[in-house]
Image (cartoon, rainbow, N blue to C red; front, side, top):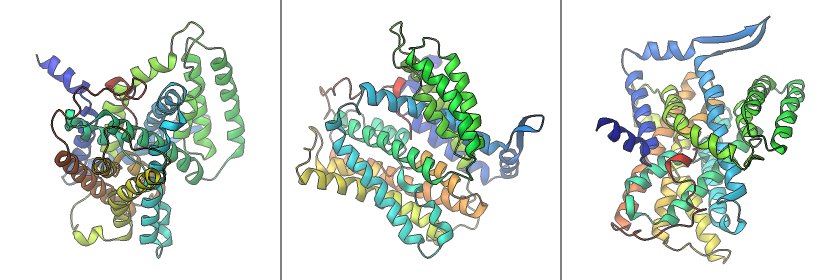
Length: 409
C-alpha cells in the first residue's frame, strides 16, 4: 500500500515541482539553523581528481553546478533534439506564437534588470538571471489545477519553456565563458568527431558515445567554456534511431528523467537556495540585484510573454489556439515567471561573492513565489472543473507531458 502510494506520487506530474520546492525550503531551514556552518563547510570543501599534476580540483558546490548540472543539460539537449526531429518544434507554424512569446519573455526581464542596475555596473552581469522559466515548477502548478486546464495551454507553456532553454543555453555559451583556452577546444574536436561517426552509423550501443562525452566534458571544462554546454553537445550526438530500428535517444531520455528530476535538480536546489534571513527586511529586497531579479521574473515575464503574444495575434501572424483565451494566456504568462532552477544557475555564473549570491537567491525566490501564487490564483479563478474533459491534444504535442518525458527548466 505504502509502496503504491509512493509510486503514484512520483508518477504525478506535479511531483518534480513539489520535490524542488521541498529542497529549497530545506535549504532555507538548514541555513537558518546551527547547521549553517556544516552547510557552508560541506559545499566549499574541495574534491580533486588529479594525476601527475593534471586534473580537476573544485569545491563540492562546483562539482554540483558544473558536473551534475551537465547531466541536467544533457537531458535538456535530448529533449530539444527529439522535439526538433519529431515533436513540437518540427512544424515551424506551431512554434511562431510560443517562440515570439519566449523572445519577449526573455528580453523584457533582462531590460528591467539592466534598467534597475544601470548605475551599478558591477551588477549588470546578472542581466540574464530572470530570463528563463522553470518548467518543472510551472507544469507542477498546472497539474495542481487538474482538468481545469485545456491541453493547449500546457502545450503553449511547455513549448515556450523549451525555447527558453535554447535561449538560456546560447546565453551561457556566449556570455558566461571564462578565459578561453583554444588548445582545449581544439582537443575537444577529437571526441566530437568520434561521436559524429558513431551517430552517422546509427550506433545501437551508446556506451562509447557516452565515454567520449565524458572526455568532451573534461576538455570543455578546461577550455573555459562552461562545462554544461558539453552536456548539450553530447545529446545531439545520441542517435534518434539505430540501424536496428530502436531509439537510443528515447531510451536514455526515459531512463534518465527520474534521476534528473528526483535527484540532480533537488540536490542543485538544496545546494544553491541557502539564504540567511537574519537581519533581512523589506529594504533588502529593494537593493538593485534582488529587485531587478524579482521585478524581472514577476513583472517582466508576464509583460513580455503576454505582450508579445497579444501583438503576434493582433498583427495576424497566428491565431490564438483553441481552448486558450486571453485571460488564461495571462495566467500562463504569470507562471512563466517561475525562474527557480535556471535563474539560480545563471546567478551562480554571474556572481561569485557571498553578498551578491545571497541577493540572487532572495530575488529568485521572491519573484518565483509571486509568479507561482498569482499564476495559480488567476487560473483557478478563470477556469472551471472538468473544463478540459474530453479534450485531447495531438500526440506530437503532448509527447513531453508524461512523467517519462518531463521537460527541463
